[in-house]
View (cartoon, rainbow, N blue to C red):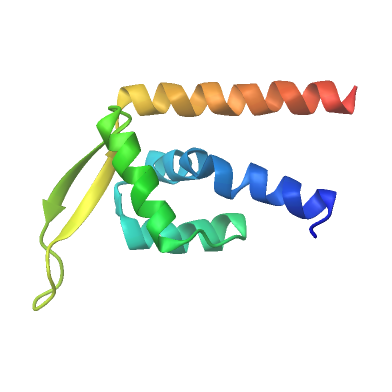
Length: 108
């Protein structure tokens, strides 16, 4: 059985993974595995590999990110880089504003 803090951490990290993905893509285009690593470095949790790909697929399907295949180092396969769209940037801003509003209310 998990306690309240463990459940909160899961809800605010893994269940809103899209927010972290969009935040990192605002910095620059990245490929899926790189995003997974950057989430771990920047936010202190490691999403499942499959979750990262599912989130990227859904974000792309809904127009929040675009992707393109790019050459990588010699001898390595092409990589699919994801880029934030204006629609994705707007969603990121709305998500952050929502969380800030909730935090503000919690603090009183």
